[in-house]
Length: 257
Image (cartoon, rainbow, N blue to C red):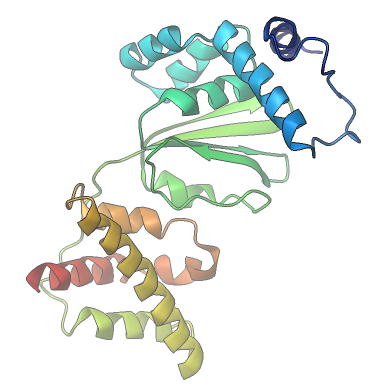
């Protein structure tokens, strides 16, 4: 095994020895054919992984790095300095970083094999086994970094807390009128266009409901931009040059009620 993988594996096995209810009752299955389908086996393996993570990357040490390190590039590299892989460093960081961070692991075909975000992050992230469209997340981020790990890549983002909203003074008509115009550019069939409008309004309604429940914390335009990120079924509509103007106009209409 590579050194970083070997070190984590030894920490994992040490966990099985030192966690009292593991010793003598469990053995690791390393073959690809031995999938962890049993709930108890999954929990025991998870406990050993958590033991290894805390042993090699102690919480206090990682939190101190988070507080003293500015860029994602520097932070991930610093945690990897514990002689662990980029995967292990990323999984550990996502457990301890504040809201607004996420990473994906992609293979050589740009297929997502892992996607994780920090607690409280509300960005709509792509699903595992889908193709990553990196620019959809790049436009929401104030910092990002890419790490090569064998045949895979790990890409991190720190999402902006506030994005610049467009001006709407010169736009005539309502937000609904503008949305219909945008949708009809792509869906001339009236029933299909109506369905797309309903889908978009559903995303906005859900996001605004959460915004109100949270005491209107944050910036609603930024929240909506994050909610529409990487939605494959709406990619063309969201990329329309007038879509951001529509969002801001809808926000202004909501605020005036």
